[in-house]
Length: 109
Image 1 (cartoon, rainbow, N blue to C red):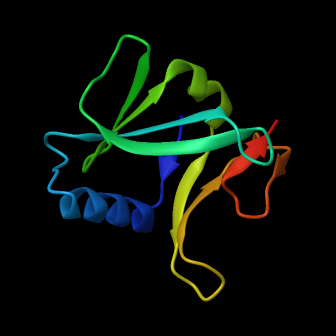
Image 2 (cartoon, one colour):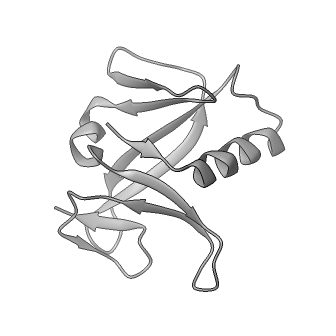
């Protein structure tokens, strides 16, 4: 499935809490959609609804939900967070991507 680095997990939970949400009532939904410079874009949001078309990853601190179509594109991907001088923010490390755009927000297979 996908993994989330410890630093990224801390930042996701921090963002959730700053929005007045908790991991007890909400989860992180990740996926892909068409668009971006390379053809597919990563998406992340907080959600409360799980459907039969979703895959659920139960981490000890947070539940992560991925729609089944996106699982194919994200299999083996790690969500990381960088706070270094070269940039700050979430980064997707996707071994399936054959090409990514310069900002890392989109990819193609």
